[in-house]
Length: 285
Image 1 (tube, helix red, strand yellow):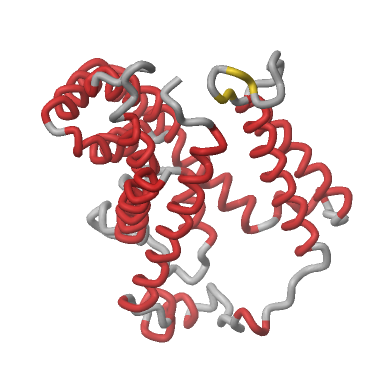
Image 2 (cartoon, rainbow, N blue to C red):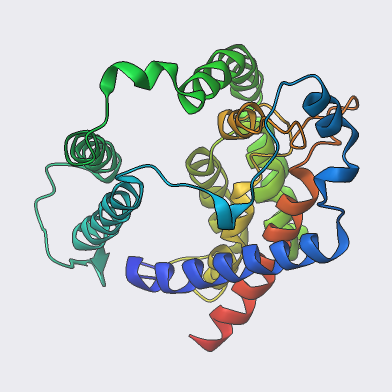
């Protein structure tokens, strides 16, 4: 209704966030010490025999079916995007599918379950060994660790939802440029991009006076949207904990002061770049 179709949003968000991540990777590579030989934690783990010395990417031996599994996964992602586009609307009219039976979230789960099935069959995965893999163990540890923390966070936020919305609306009304910061702070507490978007976007729309007849400031919502990815600030998100568990070098870790973890600086940089590029992109379209 505000003039932003799903394909147009993808055309803005995919390039801007990708470039933002690449710029972040470049800066971290240039200004951070990434040499494991000088990492005391890695050297200690290596001396104790807890980790094998890295052979380097050029000497890595891929398992049979590894490339095929990645290809199947990418096809699944592409199908998800195509389906989400087909059920979206442009100008109030459906792109392709009018009577949507399977909503977007259910479709994502269905496609990914299908992807897992095809990978298991075509790549000849030994199902019995899945639970023995380091990735599975790390993922389950992350799930167990995050259950209590996420529950606690949701309980806290659930009790103050109206206050958070009221404060966000007040900030946006006074200083509209703070919208990206509000998305960022809300995502930090809500642990979900979708929940953040659903909670803050209506408040921002009302505060900025955006309507279908007057969509002028809606570009701010589009440009600032990447800020809903601030799930890494508190080191309790499942993906973050999974990454810590999976890195047997010990170089990906959470510091003694909670916030001094391996994801904070790269995450903030990626969001800053993505939002800045988002504002540049919306001026072009």
